[in-house]
Image: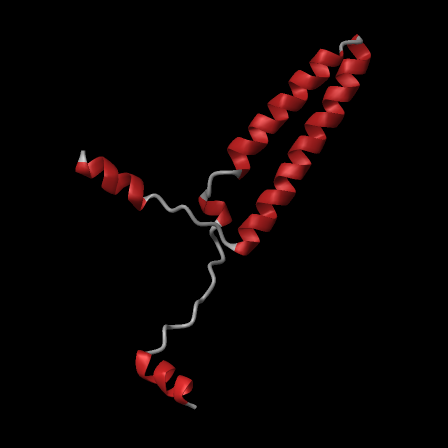
Length: 95
């Protein structure tokens, strides 16, 4: 059981800012594309329910592609500053 917990904790759960932007734009493109195709198909066969099914499929596909932090969304991590020691923090408070 412990190995499963360690495996789950080892899965990366972060996404960098550039990856967030790519994920958002990709989801917008997918949902818009499925919406347009669904609207056209629903108009052709005169069934609004088909439009909604196609749009729902696009939403599910977009969620599967963009919600998990896939490696393609973690290509440009931020370089964080190293933490300062407590001595310099205390000196700044005294001034």
